[in-house]
Length: 146
Ligand SMILES: [Zn+2]
Image (cartoon, rainbow, N blue to C red; front, side, top):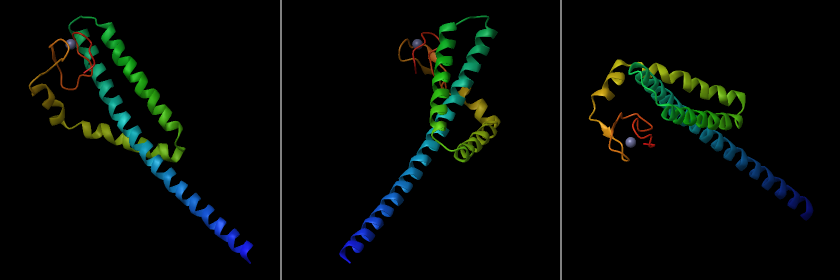
C-alpha cells in the first residue's frame, strides 16, 4: 500500500513537472517570436537607411563604401540573428511571425509618417557633430554608430 501511494505521488510529481516545462516552453517561444519581430523591425530600418544612403550617394555622385559596408554588415548580423531565432521555432510558429512581418510595411505606407522625419530638428553625431538624420544608424560623415 505504502509503495503504491509513493508511486502515484511520484507520477503526480512527474506530470506536474512536465506541465511546468510545457508552460515554460510556451513562454520561451512567445519570447522568441517577440524577439524575431523586434529584429525584423531593426532589419527593416537598417535596410531603409541603407537604401536612403545609397540613393543619396548616387545622387551626389559620391562614394562611401566603408559606411555602406557598415550597414551591410549590420543587416547581415540581424538576418543571422533572425535565422538563429527562427531555427528554434516550429514551421507553424514561424508562420505566425511571418504574418506579423507582412503586416508591417502596409502600416509604413502612411504618407504622414514618410514626410515627418525630414521636418524634425536635426540630430547631430556625438563623435564629430555632423548633422545626422533621425533614423540613421551610422554617422554619414565619420561612420560612428549612433
Ligand atoms: Zn560623425
